Image (cartoon, rainbow, N blue to C red):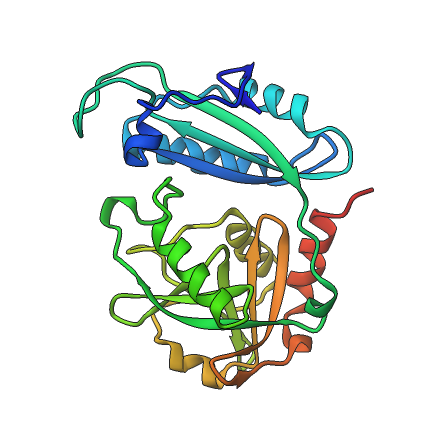
Length: 267
């Protein structure tokens, strides 16, 4: 683990990331010393820093530090950027941000996920985020509560709606479904995280001529869906069942699954 470029596992208790969740994070897939979606992650991180008024770390420095940690094979790197220790209470002062980098093993699908997973339709709802919508901030308690709920239902993932019942995302992923030859994904302008793999999927669909609609729909729309799948830094996971609805994992667009497999393939 690196904190501001030094090997350390000690973060000052006065850091605003601990005190107020005043910061952002990125979860990045590395294959060897390369991160296929690095530029997209950096754009999102810099956008988030600009929105929160945090000075972003230099991209070249982050990449150098990341490569010193990841080693060979496939690893997941987490970057956390906080506002640092400046200020008192909710009123921040200008100062030096904190950057923290560490790695963890790649999460490979479990054997029983090869035929798709069961996803729990969560009762936990996401609040509309206003200026924070789309950002990957350190405030993730709604996801923690939803994960506890999904685990209690025997599921490793869940589908989340906003306070008005509109579909938003998975607990740790973005959400897509197909119906009638068209692809759909929730609108994230009011809440949710705009995932970099989601952005990649939208680009792939556009290049392949697949019609995609970004929509505000309630969960009952999934009753008419042919396929439901989730995307994250580590790839695409098809859903076989959610809230009593059955989905055909073979109906996931091959153009999408093949593009993600190629992107994350370890040579």
